[in-house]
Image 1: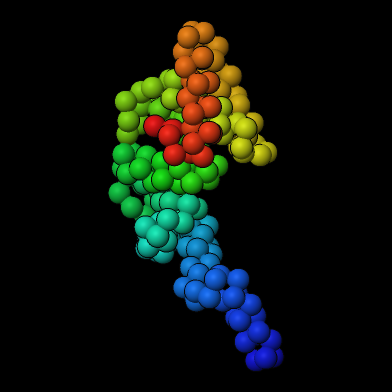
Image 2: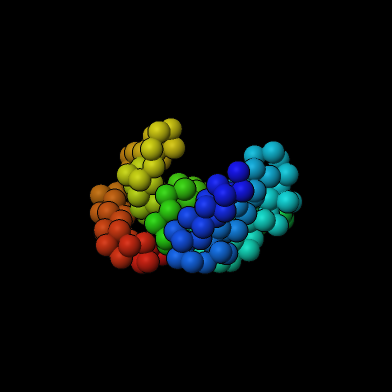
Length: 170
């Protein structure tokens, strides 16, 4: 049994480029997600925070959600927006619909329907299942209430965002 555990750890360390902290980070993200799923939001925030600061996109997304909803942390839309932007800049699909909604409703940012449409378009293309369908529904709704010029502007923003690999989206 010990031989198996040691071999497994060796494989994990080797696959992480020889950095044992990668193994710890993988375990920590699982612990943080588990705490979040159990509703232990303060504990989840404590576990997600260092991972988010290290650039782990899923941790950044979770912290964005937590700040948006006030779960385990003070409700703070500008902070939620910051974490969503950081995760989205890495091409992580999770926060893209959230960003669309924040821009559409003016939560933590000035209301900007063109930018909201951009994020919904990107989310609709990247997200699967119900989340993708919801983003497409929001995209289509906004499109039906916008001018051709606004739609064209949003499409150009989508192209720039995707071509820059999510570095030039805001």
